[in-house]
Length: 318
Image (cartoon, rainbow, N blue to C red; front, top):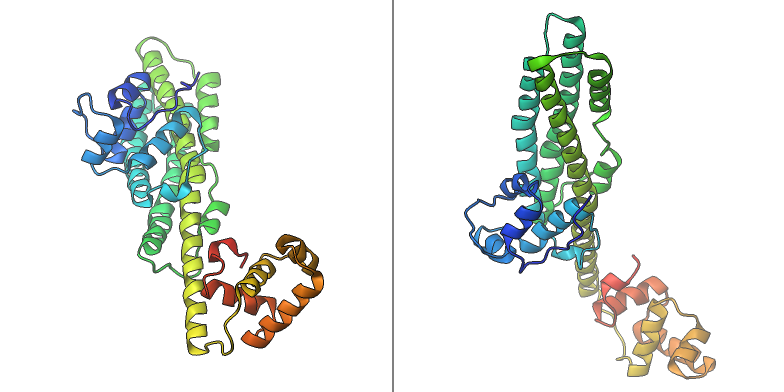
């Protein structure tokens, strides 16, 4: 049963570990060393160069499934990438070989069924390794390119999400085979039980790892992609109008109100009701706006409104 406590920056780090010893492994993946005394989560994270908000987002998600972050923009992608890379290294370089060794010690490789079990495990390990290597060669460099404000072409995080499938089918088969068909006794039974226990634990770990990627890592990347896209559009619009400045008279405050309403998609009647004026007055304002700006299309007015600071580009559907 999950611990339903929502951990905060001012909680003692020791309290988190005492309540959830499974967090010991994640500490290393975040780059947090033991020996932090009675310091709070915030104090430990800040002293060891880890973003506190991101650390707690992952902790509260993996422990209790909390997905309602206050602000996805506050998630630190460098912290997440460090965590995921270290998690890959831990799983590929330590966990997979450790379980393989335990299976070898528990099985008699002269037995055909034992050899098949090891073969299934090796196929599973190969699939996991392939999946994680793809992220390391493709996804993480893409994130680095976003952070450097120079995104790699012909790729986005949706491409990754569409191919981010589970890799645990073979693992489920392996567990079933061991439980149903592989008799053992004495020492070897204990060794096999220990190996099976580790397999279950690592299946859960890998599932949580994938969910962190889907529900924390991917949203953080999508937010950054959106920000870069908006910034790019804004720069292009500014350059365009800088090269072709609008000629004409200055708009009155009421005419600016009409422009804002039009950009927000209001009809003449809705604008009249919103501004408490007659529909004919709205029509007159629109004629004067078109004459002064020499802009007649909704898209053109939207560009004018963005560059003039009448509306924020993030509030406009591009």
